View 1 (cartoon, one colour):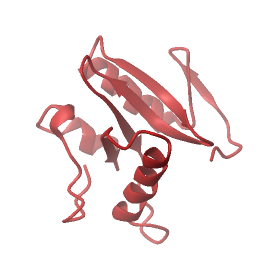
View 2 (cartoon, helix red, strand yellow):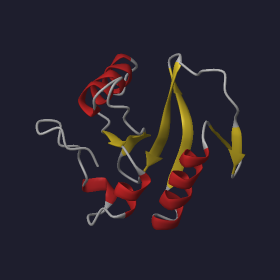
View 3 (cartoon, one colour):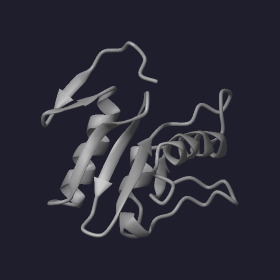
View 4 (cartoon, one colour):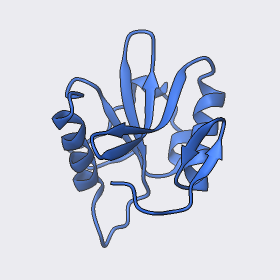
Amino acid sequence: MRRKRRIYTFDSQEFLSKAEIKCYRFLKSKYPGIRIDANTPVGIYFIDFKIELPNEVFFLEFHPIRKRVETYRSYYWRRRKILDEHGYATNRLFVVTSLKRLQTAKLPLIILQPDIINNRPL
C-alpha cells in the first residue's frame, strides 16, 4: 500500500524515491524502446516497474532489503503473492536489491531470475 510520501516526477511518471528514478533511467538507457511503467497499481498495492516486451510482461521491484525487518526471500514471496492474487501468476517477478547489482549484471535482464532457493538476490 502506498505510504504518504513525497512523490517525484520524471518522464511523466511518478516515483517514490530518487533511487527508483535512477533505476528507471538505467533500464531505459540499457533497453531503449521497451515500455517500462513505474508504480503500476496491482489491487491496492503498487509494483515498482512493469516491463512490457513483445512477447512477455514482467515485474521488477527495486527494494533495498533492511536485514532486521525482512529478508530477500520474505519480500519476494510477499510481492509474488500480491501479483498472484490479482491475475499475474504467470508473469515473472524480479527483485533488485541495489542499483549497482542491476548495473553489473552480465546477462540480459530478461533471463535473470532470482535464485530463491539459495536466497541470492540480484
